[in-house]
Image (cartoon, rainbow, N blue to C red):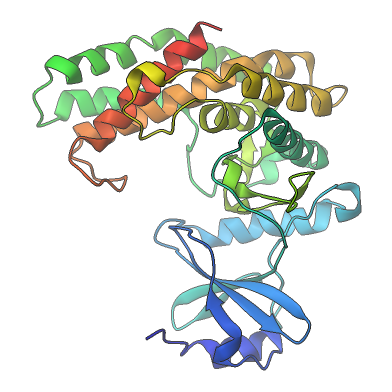
Length: 341
């Protein structure tokens, strides 16, 4: 039986009179506990925030406050459902040691994969428009909600450490994977080169397709959501994560190795969306860096999956012992395919 012992305090802090029958669980998110609330003629999303995963909620509030102050919602073709301040003006409400936040509910469809290139194009446009909307914001003002999240150089060093300290026998299939990923030194060096050339921007930093809400008929994007990972980053981060998750012919847990390829129509649609929005806003070097982003983000996930397997599967949820090994192998095939483009 669901306990809503926190409800009276939520009502007090937000000026509601919500009853338990107006609350129901919502979505299939794995990090935060999410509820849909009906109050008078409006709907809201209430989240019990997992501050074990995001250990710096004050940094997220800081970044969201910048967005609230600096981004004009009238200049965006979609909604940013940012947290609603409570009666004290705070974006998080702490109740019995737990963090809660309230946000407007946005109608539409949230999907885990796209079926057509045009849907990929709309996704790329939306995430690029988000970056452009905040291009005037000094990226150094943003705080790291997850430190070193996309630092390829650090992830490479972590993989090296995992290889040297693992209790597993590095032979056979595991040795092939270790050798492949350690041979990506050139990609790591290219990362350092792009960092020296490119400006830091406000990036979404987790551009999965399910972090968008489409219109019911998929004619447009209604909202860009899951804004907890907003940080200073590079444009190729957001493009690259889209490529990794949208333009692959198989999901990241697939073992259909021979079927893991780049879906070129979707890849071209993603590139078109970013280039169209970025023209005149992004630098020439930022546009040139986009194809590298797909390789880099695929490689970094391969590093992370493989390191986790070597460390004894301590970070990612697995359903069988070799799943992180297979995820790393999956990303290897995708990276090889991207490197052939």
